[in-house]
Length: 190
Image (tube, rainbow, N blue to C red; front, side):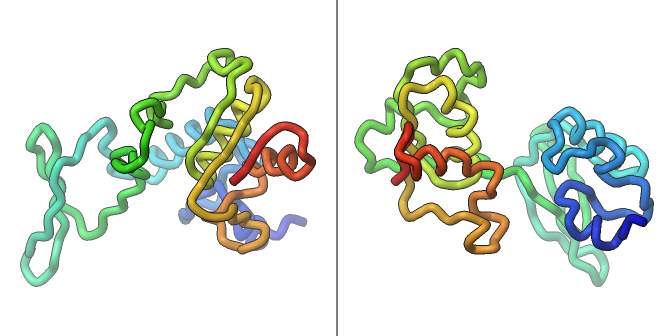
């Protein structure tokens, strides 16, 4: 018999709800599901739990307002529509790419937000990736089969989640490029 509590504790993709059947394993048996399966799950979750979600809405101002004896959060959209709530969750990542002003040659850098996702655009190229987080390693892993040489560079040493037990550090699924560096075959890490 399945242990639902154990399975949920080790399910990295399901959202909590009162509906026990509304879990990601109903959509995919993969530990790292395909993006399309995850999108379908999230859409179904939002619909079944009747979440009040505003899509394609650019929030330009957030302020705190008083409503009776309670404090509320007011968000104003680009179209001047106001949304009030008690709790706001912002999970957009960095809204503006970071480019250090004092680094020579940054004008030659292509940002993560504008890079091509067509792997053939990188055939035979030598690639430098600045950063040592999950996004950097995910990008390196995706481009490595096409590249001539891949170098991943960051401010400090690589922190692997398997060593630190912190899920924000580089996850095992994104660390395959470390093998090719450790085995002195193709790539460089610094």
